[in-house]
Length: 81
Image 1: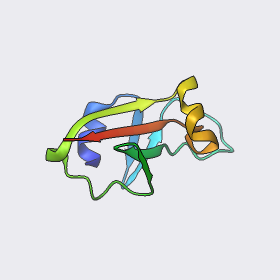
Image 2: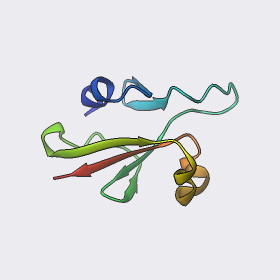
Image 3: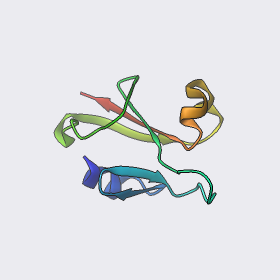
Image 4: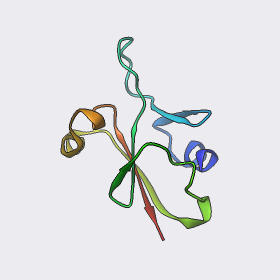
């Protein structure tokens, strides 16, 4: 899944099993994005098989407010088939 994300989404950087938002430039905060799979917040997305992915989207605007502080660095939304 991480290879799929790094090849499809320009606004993020993948380092191992962590996805970072490229737009966050603060030295004091961790720019790791929040993972949301089929509307549910998950801690890890390693279980997601690339063949099962319907869409991948990075949200990093005002609409991340629905996830509160967790979504401050952006949200990686994955919809499965």
